[in-house]
Each structure stands twice: as C-alpha cells, then as structure tokens.
Image (cartoon, rainbow, N blue to C red):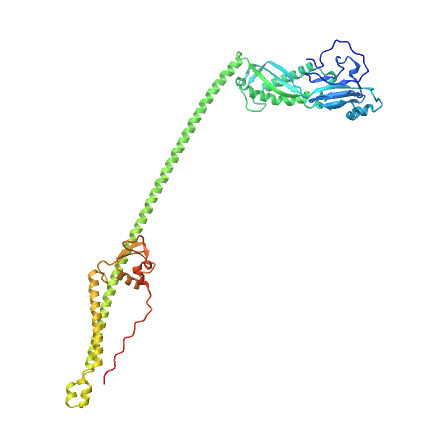
Length: 501
C-alpha cells in the first residue's frame, strides 16, 4: 500500500465553498497527509487551505499534526485522539498566534495536516547475504553465513519522529528501504563478533550459532533497538531472526567442525579425569576421616576403661577402709566392755570391804557387856549389835552383788560372741553406711554404744532386711530412742536409818 493511498480518477469538485471535514479513513498507514476526499496528494490547493470552523476527527491511537510554514521556520499544532470537534482558536494556540482573528468566519488559512498512526505496526522483511565469519581459534579459515528475518516498527514519540523526517516528502517504501539497509548493516556487524564474545556474553562458536539462534537473536536485538530509535525515531518490536544459514560445504567450516569435535572430546576427557580425581580425593578424605573417627573412638574407649578401673580401685579402697574401721570399732567396743567389767569388779570389791568394816564396827563385846557392865546397858545394845548398821550393810552388799553378777554375765556373753554386748537370737541387725561403703551388721545394743562414742548419728544411713532403701537412723522407729537426750539426774540414794539407842 502507498503511503498516501490510491489516486481517484473521478472528476474533481470545484474548489472553495463549503467547510471541510478533516478525518483519516486509511486502514494501514504510518504517515498520511490529509486532502479532500477523492484527491491525490499535492494535486489541489484545498489540502493546504484550511477553513476556520471545519470539523476535525482524530481517532484513538492517532495524532493530527498541523504544520505552518513561516519565514522563520515551521511551526505546528498537534491534536491527539480521540478528538471530534471543530477547528477553533482555543484548540490551536500556534495557529492563533500566527493568523489572529483577522481571517474570521470561513476564511481559509495555510496549513498542512498529517495523520500519524501511533498504534500501527509496520513489518519489514530483511535478508543479510552471505558474509564471512571467522572463528578466533582459526582466523585464517572463513565460514560463509547468511541471516534472514523480519522486524516490526512503530512510532511512539511522534514529536521526535517529526524532527527527524520531512513529513511533506515522506515516502513509506523509501523509509522501509532505509531502515532495512541500516538493519542489515547492524546485524552483520554484530553477528561477525559473536564468536569471540565482543558484544557481551560468552563466545558462541560458529558451528553452534545455528542451534543457539535464540541467544544470537537476543544479542543482535539489544544492539538494534537503540540505534533505530536514535536514527529513525521508530521503536523496533518483534525482532526475529528466522534463519542462520551456514555454508557447511566450505573448507573453513570443515576445519572448524573438526577442531570443535576434537576440542569437545578433549574437554570431555579432561572433565572425566577431573571427576575421577575429585572422586578419588573425596574417597581419600572420607577414609582419613573414618580412620580419625576410629582413632578417637579407641582413645575414648581406653579413657573410659581407665576411669572405670580407677573408680573400681577407689571403691575397693573405700570398702577396705570401711571394713578396717568397723573391725577397729568392734575391738574398741570389746576393750570398753572389758574395762567396764574391771572397774565394776573393783567397785564391788571396795563395797565388800566397806561392808566388812561396817560390820565389825557394829559388833560389841557381848561377854563384857553381860558380865561386868551395867544391866541396863546390856539390854539397850542388844547384846553388843547395832541393828541399823547391819541392815544398811546387808542392802549395800546385796546391791553390789547383783550388779557384779549381771556385769560378769554380760561380759562373758559378749566375749563369747566376739563383741562387747551379746545379741539375742532373732534380734534385728542393721548395716551402717561409712564413707560410702556398707559396714556391719550391728545389733541395737552395738548401735547404742556407737551413738555414745559418736560414731553413729541420727543422719547416718542404715539398712536392714525388709527396707527398700537406706534410711537415716533417726527415722527408723527401732533406733529413734537411741538419739533421745537424757536430761534427768540420777535420783539420790535413800538416807541410812539412824542407829537405834
């Protein structure tokens, strides 16, 4: 389609007269110059003679540009769609400043009206003929390549576009050719540098460019877009390289293909060797770690055995000391019992001697009392005997004798059992915890003596058959009485009755 539509061969209407209806009914255009309906571009004066009050219609996605050619340059008014109204001073500030109100009414003024399609997309096909490509590894072997594709362009900044182009001389086909020639130059310039990575990204070998066409497309597009916007004022959309045609029959391609195959094979072998070495190194480290773990476990086991051995020796030592202490305590208790027997024996002997002396003191000469003495005196002294003294001496002797008998019985009984005090058959025996070891068993009587000697306290732990756990001695009902403090004094001995006169 031509930029300005087809020429209508029908007869032209008379110029002048009625108001104009300014609108664009073209379907596919980028730039279109308005002229009366049925006229071709630049064939009538009416297309540049616009009347005040003419109707103006601008659809959405369009912009109507009014150009005014003045001596000091070209000025313009831009009406963006959607707009549907008439040409008035308020809508055209540039026009108002140029012509003022002198024209008035339907007086025409000089202006060119261009419609710019902001929503339109123009597709352009391009083909870059065969050109030489060079692999940086073999710069002496060129490879022929051709590039084919298409792109679409549109106008987004119409003011910038107007600055770059003369709308009055604009030709769409010529514009397409200009953009296509520039695009071919840029595509070729970028493509030849892709193998060495000059335009960013990793280098792409020539023999791989065809299968990596999407990556090549992105690299070229990044360079093309800003260039086309800067030079032509158009936005490139949907840039598409559809084919990268490599001449695989040329000598250069065969050389590079063989080199690439060898390089790929060597790379794979090298990678395999690296993988094997890495695996071996990982296995070595794993074995070293396993050996170190086993060494640490063995060391920990040896240390555990040493600690257990030392703890066992210490426990055995404590048990030995506890048994020795218990044996010593039993010997001391036997010595205490023997010493008590000796002392009580001596007390009994002394008491007997005292009784004997008292008896002799209470006896009088019965013969002298009855023969030569006073008859009354003989009657009063009961023949020379003191009855009160005799009764007291007899009581003391009886008490001492009973005490000695009990003491001797206990002493002999204790000696027969190897301990100080005898134990009755069936009596309860208790074990005592001493320095963390069990000693005993002991009878209640033995425990009583241990309380008196300070070896057993209410907090000492004891155990006997039937008890679930070791218990403080003060909490055992049978032993609680051993720790009761006796605060009462020994009652006084009854007084000896006075002698009878």
